[in-house]
Image (cartoon, rainbow, N blue to C red; front, side):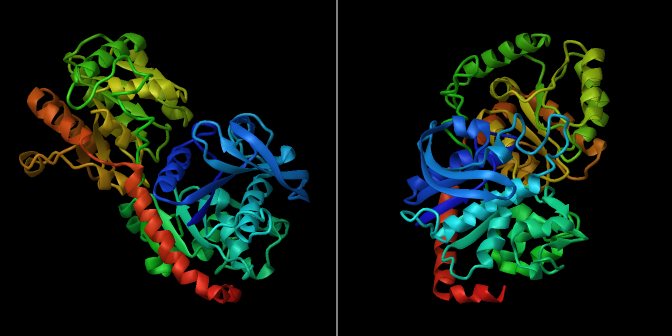
Length: 498
């Protein structure tokens, strides 16, 4: 089974969110399951720098506004997974975020930059760029690579089956329809039943309409996006795909996230030897200027600071939490950046509550590991959450999640109800309504449990015992690939109707 993954980012080379973590771990798990896997990536500076033994596959000439585009093949330096890199300096040789200019606005030529990614992926799937390797499956990720599915669907000679994974439906890749002609696609696609979306051109719809199979990153999110509250205007399109849509839960890269071997934390520990976690907590409190107090439950946030992540709910619930903190009961650390209003609110809270609240407005992978190891609990109060990786990392580190009952959070955390505690199934705390009051109640439940050390250790241990490995996810993906190849390969002429 030959599988080509098309994506815009990959850990540890380029990361803005969980998409990069998936592309950094899933290919290796698929290879271990017997697949022949390659990636196709845009030639961003960090990606070119992170490749070994790059060789020219072919020169593509002047396409999508670039005067010179070269397709290269090499191996990622950190894991030896083979990857094609689209070397187009005019489109990709830019600093910082792959999608945004330094001022926070989108690059004005993003349509061409990511259309090129999908176009190259589709031509690789057709077997005409690398004569030595043609995939059985083209697996496109998020809106950045979604256009690959439309290019394949419009070319019936392409033999690869297509799978499209939605990592976050809220980010759809919307552009002015006046630029549709730049894509080189038939005009019949620029209609409401095609790529048109409320007067705009939607890359996301290319995946939703034209992929042979659609996946999301958790089963619950797959069900949610078929409903109006979570469908971001595309729920009708998703419902129309019926059983073509499924959810496969993301995993955790055990080589990166493992408290027993993590070199970024103050002391190693495991489910059988937890003493190191207490040392990690003390070290974190010292590093961040918090009062060093073992008996104070240390809550944490490692997230983009946005309303999607429900962090405005946490701001409103802070008086309840910090009222307890001032009596020696709780602390909070926040790592992340995003909405200026939320950043300012957390900074103000740290100024008003020194020793109880610490805030770092940055993306810091190493500090994220130290927080995961040193905190007692992680807060993920998201309004919607396709999967959520933070709570999976936290469970592995014995850091108890406090989450909203939504998306992948509901798939991965078992609420500490009376029944769940009696059955020794509880792994965290959950709340339903997206309100500060509901979050505050969950926080108080967590604090009450923390003050019962035997109960807290029981919840920690159950969480650390969970298996969210990529091996399990790879098994599900391999079954999906086999099914879609078996269905599509004998009947490629069905795509001519598109």
